[in-house]
Image (cartoon, rainbow, N blue to C red; front, side):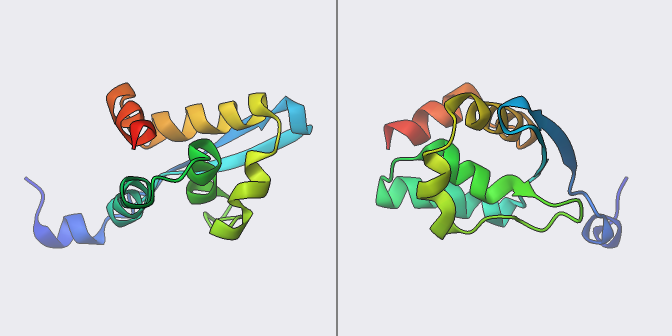
Length: 110
């Protein structure tokens, strides 16, 4: 059984490279921490903002070191990007961060 120190000492973040042919390259997508996911979900339930896919990209698209590439200020501009490219990012970020279809539907409703 894992101990407290073992769990707290783990580096459990993960990232994957996703090819985006529409952009002629690839991006890295990372897992969110529990705090990051709660913040992401709270933003949608409290503010009822649109642009769900781009906002998920803001929270998950990173460089090879796991540093996020975008800020909240970039979400609107990202939302104007190719829908197929954004869907690739959204699908991988949803899978990597264990979003269920029910989670997504609930957030989109709000």
